[in-house]
Amino acid sequence: MYLIRGARTEDIGTLLKLARMVHFINLPADKEALTEKIRSSRTSFLHVASGSERRQDSREKLANEPRVQGLTAGLADTDQFMFVLTDSETGSVLGTSQLIAHMGGVGNPNYGFKLERQDFFADDIKTGTSHMVARLVEDESGPTEIGGLILQPASRGANLGRFLSFVRFHFIGMRREVFADRVLAEMMAPLTADGRSLFWEYLGRRFIPLNYVEADAQCGRSRQFIASLLPKEGLYLSLLPPSARDEVGVVHKETVPARRILEKLGFVYDGIVDPFDAGPQLEAETDTIPIVGRTAPTELGEPKEESACDRQGIVSMLHSDGEFFAVWGPMEIDNEGRVSVPVEAMRALRVREGDEVGVTDITDGVGPIGGVK
Image (cartoon, rainbow, N blue to C red; front, side, top):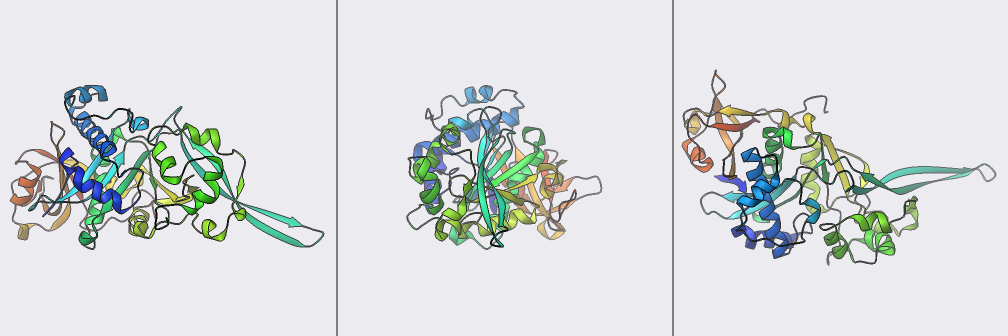
């Protein structure tokens, strides 16, 4: 069976291999940066499990773990969670995904380009033109952000990508108070074979004297340079060559399945793109995401044979020491609302009858709720 758990330092080797497969700012191909992200994730799981009001309390409990100063400074004061998908028989890590409780905030905004169409008409020559204009916008609301989802190619096609995606919303549903009322997903844009963004080369780099990788990495430390160097005036995208203009609002081919999953959950694109590569930003109101609304704490009943289970869903356990586990498989819900799963699943979750677990029933799919179409 397949198990999702919180990332650990022993996962570094596989995570580095995954990071080198595709360019994600949330999954840097750098051992020190990944070590710090894992440590921050473990702190966050422990923080949420303990109910502590201060992340510092949880950091002190993990004081002996490796720490790298200066990395991911922009996220130091928010909970961020890194999940890994494993084969429970071999222990192999097959993929990963991430969840950030609050991205930015007051005095530390997120930046994007808002795309607006402008129409012009000349009466004297009876001719008009339309132009797409990009304007730099700031967001200090501190939305929740999802990202960093990647699955090994050999493991694709078995709904494992959906599991990695859904577990983030399941976790939000279980700890709703930790997260914002809006969820963002910054989708990866097309890149060249050598990892460059044509949009960045023809626009961003004219104002910020860094290459795409350097600029992206700098965002992990500070984003102030974006506001300082990018123009506040509208930028006419018609001045870009077609090769760069055609990438605006488009996702990388590896990201197409992830976008489809999110759109089925009610995420929409509202014309805001990443200021570096022009990848689209999708968003949804947290409480309208079906999986969030269908997730609830439930008492665990006695184990059931798989053949006796007539429902499917995600069942999870966040232990008091911050260890998180989740499985997706057969389950049964009795008349008193207790959930039962096979013994194998109980062992993977490290739970026993009477424990309180998180449950998302997805037997009937993940159709719309709360007005999402």
